[in-house]
Length: 216
Image (cartoon, rainbow, N blue to C red; front, side):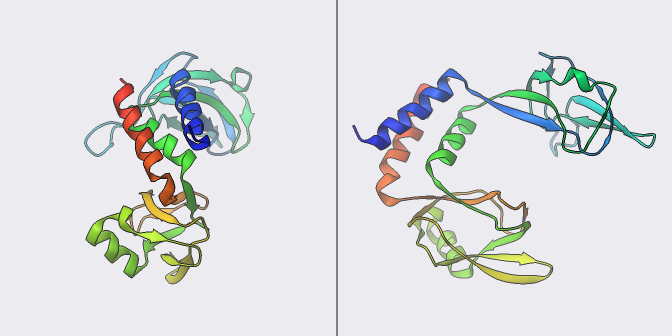
Protein backbone atom coordinates (compact mmCIF):
# COMPACT_ATOMS: atom_id res chain seq x y z
CA UNK A 1 0.00 0.00 0.00
CA UNK A 2 1.42 3.39 -1.01
CA UNK A 3 1.73 6.39 1.30
CA UNK A 4 -0.85 8.15 -0.88
CA UNK A 5 -3.37 5.36 -0.26
CA UNK A 6 -2.72 5.56 3.48
CA UNK A 7 -3.26 9.32 3.28
CA UNK A 8 -6.60 8.78 1.55
CA UNK A 9 -7.68 6.23 4.19
CA UNK A 10 -6.88 8.69 6.96
CA UNK A 11 -8.90 11.44 5.29
CA UNK A 12 -11.90 9.16 4.72
CA UNK A 13 -11.76 7.94 8.33
CA UNK A 14 -11.73 11.53 9.57
CA UNK A 15 -14.85 12.43 7.59
CA UNK A 16 -16.58 9.22 8.64
CA UNK A 17 -16.03 10.03 12.34
CA UNK A 18 -17.09 13.68 11.94
CA UNK A 19 -19.10 14.17 8.70
CA UNK A 20 -19.77 17.86 9.31
CA UNK A 21 -18.59 21.24 8.19
CA UNK A 22 -18.33 23.88 10.91
CA UNK A 23 -19.42 27.28 9.58
CA UNK A 24 -18.43 30.27 11.71
CA UNK A 25 -20.65 33.35 11.54
CA UNK A 26 -19.13 36.77 12.11
CA UNK A 27 -20.48 40.26 12.77
CA UNK A 28 -21.04 41.88 9.38
CA UNK A 29 -20.27 45.33 10.82
CA UNK A 30 -19.95 47.08 14.17
CA UNK A 31 -23.05 47.31 16.33
CA UNK A 32 -25.04 45.86 19.22
CA UNK A 33 -25.84 42.15 18.80
CA UNK A 34 -29.00 40.30 19.79
CA UNK A 35 -29.09 36.56 19.13
CA UNK A 36 -32.25 35.09 17.59
CA UNK A 37 -31.36 31.39 18.01
CA UNK A 38 -30.21 29.10 20.81
CA UNK A 39 -27.59 26.36 20.89
CA UNK A 40 -28.83 23.15 19.23
CA UNK A 41 -31.44 25.13 17.23
CA UNK A 42 -32.04 23.75 13.73
CA UNK A 43 -31.40 26.33 11.01
CA UNK A 44 -32.25 26.33 7.32
CA UNK A 45 -30.49 27.72 4.25
CA UNK A 46 -32.18 30.03 1.72
CA UNK A 47 -34.87 28.20 -0.25
CA UNK A 48 -37.14 28.64 -3.23
CA UNK A 49 -36.46 28.23 -6.92
CA UNK A 50 -34.16 31.26 -6.98
CA UNK A 51 -33.07 31.01 -3.32
CA UNK A 52 -35.24 34.08 -2.78
CA UNK A 53 -36.63 32.89 0.57
CA UNK A 54 -34.12 33.82 3.28
CA UNK A 55 -32.71 31.29 5.71
CA UNK A 56 -33.31 31.14 9.45
CA UNK A 57 -32.69 34.47 11.26
CA UNK A 58 -29.51 34.08 13.37
CA UNK A 59 -28.87 37.45 14.94
CA UNK A 60 -29.78 41.11 14.75
CA UNK A 61 -27.09 43.76 14.71
CA UNK A 62 -28.03 47.36 15.45
CA UNK A 63 -25.87 50.30 14.42
CA UNK A 64 -27.07 53.89 14.79
CA UNK A 65 -30.68 52.71 15.31
CA UNK A 66 -30.55 50.78 12.05
CA UNK A 67 -31.16 47.10 12.92
CA UNK A 68 -30.25 44.41 10.39
CA UNK A 69 -31.20 40.73 10.68
CA UNK A 70 -28.58 38.27 9.45
CA UNK A 71 -29.87 34.91 8.23
CA UNK A 72 -28.29 31.49 7.79
CA UNK A 73 -26.75 30.61 4.44
CA UNK A 74 -26.57 26.91 5.25
CA UNK A 75 -28.65 24.23 6.95
CA UNK A 76 -27.62 22.49 10.14
CA UNK A 77 -27.56 22.92 13.91
CA UNK A 78 -26.23 25.79 16.01
CA UNK A 79 -23.17 24.22 17.63
CA UNK A 80 -22.07 27.16 19.78
CA UNK A 81 -22.98 30.77 20.56
CA UNK A 82 -20.91 33.53 22.14
CA UNK A 83 -23.55 34.18 24.81
CA UNK A 84 -21.36 36.76 26.53
CA UNK A 85 -21.79 39.03 23.48
CA UNK A 86 -25.60 39.04 23.57
CA UNK A 87 -26.82 42.63 23.95
CA UNK A 88 -23.28 44.00 23.68
CA UNK A 89 -21.47 46.15 21.13
CA UNK A 90 -19.12 44.17 18.87
CA UNK A 91 -16.58 45.04 16.21
CA UNK A 92 -16.94 44.00 12.58
CA UNK A 93 -15.57 40.49 12.06
CA UNK A 94 -16.17 39.31 15.63
CA UNK A 95 -17.04 35.59 15.71
CA UNK A 96 -20.59 35.19 17.03
CA UNK A 97 -21.69 31.60 16.52
CA UNK A 98 -20.92 28.34 14.73
CA UNK A 99 -23.27 26.18 12.66
CA UNK A 100 -22.65 22.42 12.32
CA UNK A 101 -23.61 21.54 8.75
CA UNK A 102 -24.11 17.83 7.89
CA UNK A 103 -22.13 17.07 4.77
CA UNK A 104 -23.83 15.34 1.85
CA UNK A 105 -22.01 12.69 -0.17
CA UNK A 106 -21.18 15.18 -2.93
CA UNK A 107 -19.85 17.70 -0.38
CA UNK A 108 -17.66 15.05 1.27
CA UNK A 109 -16.16 14.11 -2.10
CA UNK A 110 -15.50 17.77 -2.89
CA UNK A 111 -13.95 18.39 0.54
CA UNK A 112 -11.64 15.37 0.13
CA UNK A 113 -10.66 16.50 -3.36
CA UNK A 114 -9.75 19.94 -2.06
CA UNK A 115 -7.37 18.25 0.38
CA UNK A 116 -5.58 16.11 -2.21
CA UNK A 117 -5.57 18.30 -5.33
CA UNK A 118 -3.28 21.26 -5.89
CA UNK A 119 -5.53 24.33 -5.55
CA UNK A 120 -4.66 27.27 -7.78
CA UNK A 121 -6.13 30.35 -6.12
CA UNK A 122 -7.35 33.74 -7.35
CA UNK A 123 -4.48 36.25 -6.89
CA UNK A 124 -6.96 39.05 -6.15
CA UNK A 125 -10.68 39.80 -6.27
CA UNK A 126 -11.60 40.00 -9.96
CA UNK A 127 -13.51 38.32 -12.76
CA UNK A 128 -11.81 35.29 -14.28
CA UNK A 129 -11.94 33.53 -17.63
CA UNK A 130 -9.99 30.63 -19.07
CA UNK A 131 -7.45 31.59 -21.72
CA UNK A 132 -8.96 31.09 -25.19
CA UNK A 133 -6.91 28.00 -26.09
CA UNK A 134 -7.64 26.37 -22.71
CA UNK A 135 -11.37 27.13 -23.02
CA UNK A 136 -11.46 25.65 -26.52
CA UNK A 137 -9.85 22.42 -25.26
CA UNK A 138 -12.31 22.28 -22.36
CA UNK A 139 -15.24 22.82 -24.77
CA UNK A 140 -13.92 20.06 -27.03
CA UNK A 141 -13.03 17.32 -24.55
CA UNK A 142 -13.68 18.59 -21.01
CA UNK A 143 -11.44 20.06 -18.33
CA UNK A 144 -9.86 16.72 -17.44
CA UNK A 145 -8.36 16.48 -20.93
CA UNK A 146 -6.26 19.60 -20.31
CA UNK A 147 -2.71 19.08 -19.03
CA UNK A 148 -0.99 22.16 -17.62
CA UNK A 149 2.43 22.89 -16.19
CA UNK A 150 4.17 25.81 -14.46
CA UNK A 151 4.44 28.88 -16.68
CA UNK A 152 1.39 28.08 -18.81
CA UNK A 153 -0.98 30.97 -19.44
CA UNK A 154 -4.24 29.36 -18.37
CA UNK A 155 -6.53 32.12 -17.09
CA UNK A 156 -7.32 35.76 -17.81
CA UNK A 157 -8.02 38.09 -14.89
CA UNK A 158 -10.38 40.98 -15.65
CA UNK A 159 -10.07 43.87 -13.20
CA UNK A 160 -11.11 47.51 -13.65
CA UNK A 161 -11.89 46.83 -17.33
CA UNK A 162 -8.34 45.61 -17.85
CA UNK A 163 -7.45 42.02 -18.79
CA UNK A 164 -4.26 40.45 -17.41
CA UNK A 165 -2.92 36.96 -18.18
CA UNK A 166 -2.49 34.65 -15.18
CA UNK A 167 0.30 32.08 -15.39
CA UNK A 168 0.08 28.74 -13.63
CA UNK A 169 2.52 28.24 -10.75
CA UNK A 170 1.56 24.82 -9.35
CA UNK A 171 2.53 21.22 -9.96
CA UNK A 172 2.11 19.72 -13.45
CA UNK A 173 -1.12 17.82 -13.96
CA UNK A 174 -4.60 17.79 -15.42
CA UNK A 175 -7.40 20.21 -14.54
CA UNK A 176 -9.51 17.89 -12.39
CA UNK A 177 -11.94 20.41 -10.86
CA UNK A 178 -13.11 23.90 -11.84
CA UNK A 179 -14.42 26.07 -9.02
CA UNK A 180 -15.56 29.17 -10.90
CA UNK A 181 -17.85 30.09 -13.76
CA UNK A 182 -16.14 32.18 -16.44
CA UNK A 183 -17.02 35.83 -15.91
CA UNK A 184 -17.94 35.43 -12.24
CA UNK A 185 -16.31 37.63 -9.62
CA UNK A 186 -14.01 35.57 -7.36
CA UNK A 187 -12.54 36.71 -4.03
CA UNK A 188 -8.80 36.72 -3.48
CA UNK A 189 -7.52 33.37 -2.22
CA UNK A 190 -10.55 31.38 -3.38
CA UNK A 191 -9.59 28.31 -5.48
CA UNK A 192 -10.08 28.66 -9.23
CA UNK A 193 -9.08 25.13 -10.25
CA UNK A 194 -7.90 21.90 -8.66
CA UNK A 195 -5.02 20.16 -10.45
CA UNK A 196 -4.21 16.46 -10.17
CA UNK A 197 -0.84 14.95 -11.06
CA UNK A 198 -1.37 12.23 -13.67
CA UNK A 199 0.06 9.49 -11.42
CA UNK A 200 -2.48 10.41 -8.72
CA UNK A 201 -5.51 10.05 -10.99
CA UNK A 202 -6.21 6.36 -10.24
CA UNK A 203 -6.05 7.05 -6.49
CA UNK A 204 -8.33 10.07 -6.76
CA UNK A 205 -10.86 8.07 -8.78
CA UNK A 206 -10.59 5.24 -6.25
CA UNK A 207 -11.51 7.49 -3.33
CA UNK A 208 -14.43 9.03 -5.24
CA UNK A 209 -15.77 5.55 -6.07
CA UNK A 210 -15.28 4.43 -2.48
CA UNK A 211 -17.16 7.38 -0.97
CA UNK A 212 -20.02 6.95 -3.44
CA UNK A 213 -20.28 3.24 -2.57
CA UNK A 214 -19.88 3.44 1.22
CA UNK A 215 -21.61 6.69 2.23
CA UNK A 216 -25.34 6.67 2.83
